[in-house]
Length: 211
Image 1 (cartoon, rainbow, N blue to C red):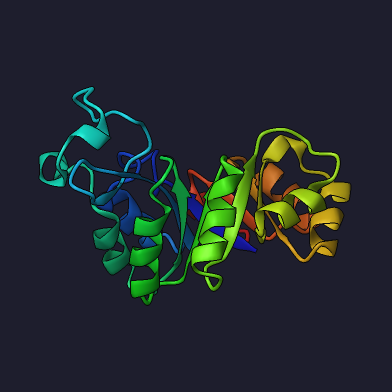
Image 2 (cartoon, helix red, strand yellow):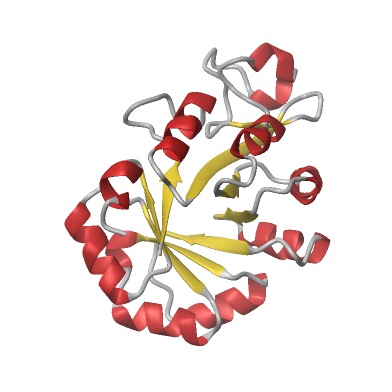
């Protein structure tokens, strides 16, 4: 089971920052989860919200105006340098081509996921070798059909909705279940017992001790 650092280590460092990712690696996280958007000059950067800390839209600003607090995805991939998997959540429509270009050029293991399931389908079309995932905050009756429609491998489920039936259904379809966002060790233990494949957490050091 993978321990996935949610946006780095947000309880110790600002989320989606180089310092947070460095801490996650030091804490022994198997993987890092982060969010991406694209700037006005076409640079894919790591940031969750549509606006910058100065409340200006990310897609209206050049990448240089966002440094050093908002790093380019290419810089993060170089920082990780194969020491962990990087799970990239696409937060902005229409940037899949740019994201795929960066991921295919990197030697770091990567995967892409999004709440917009069309992202998974598009990335699978562009680069079949990059695993994709779908994010869920509801309990779907027929998850296997959703995975097939998106061409996805990973089922990112809000953790309180995960049960044995869901895990069995996803596994039977050849998929993987990733629970988000789990910060309680006892909850992590229960999910591990259910057979989830990954746990996304704000506290990788705390949960990593239970791997």
